[in-house]
Image (tube, rainbow, N blue to C red; front, side):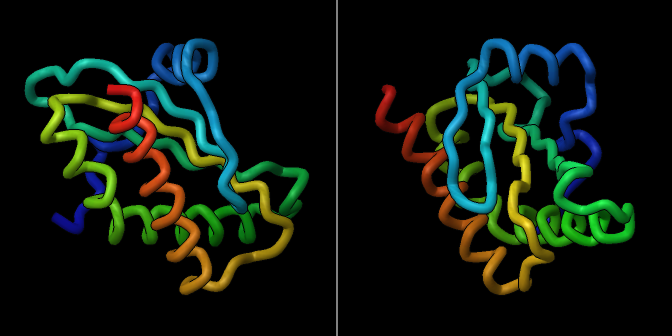
Length: 129
């Protein structure tokens, strides 16, 4: 269950464009979260995720990659907070986590922030239905 496979990554340019055009968003510091819900298709993961860190926040690629690695790891550990409610309702979601913080985060702080963001995202769909 604690995996983050290639199928779970949002990498299609068409899907990314659709996410930002048709999707909604909310802010949960240090993440700006874009999301787009749709009915689940067979043989596809319930959550497809993208992580992005702006060049303005971190000039060095080493720092951007470090933050992305931390974000992916915290998502991988906590993704059941989002995936389980989606499985029950037969829903699929595309999500983009844009990191907007100014400093390289501590792993434990980032983990609590990711849990909060995933819980908010799961609640959004429950409230809409």
